[in-house]
Length: 83
Image (cartoon, rainbow, N blue to C red; front, top):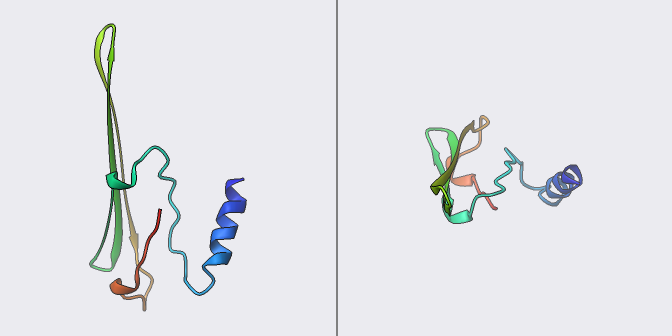
C-alpha cells in the first residue's frame, strides 16, 4: 500500500528529514522542475498529450506547482530530492 511505501521511505532516510512527499504519477522526470530559492522549495511539473481522434485533435494538459518553506536552520544547499 502507499502508506507502507511511505513508511519504508521515512525509515530508510532516518538520517535525513523528509520535508515533503508528492505523487507525481503521470509525469515524466524530465517534466518536473525543482528549485530551491529564498528559503523555499518549489516543485513544478507540466504534462501535455496530443491525441488524434475521429473528431480531430484532443489535448490533455496537466500542471502542478507547490511551494514548501524550509524549516528554520535548514540551508538551501542541504536540500536533496529524488523521484
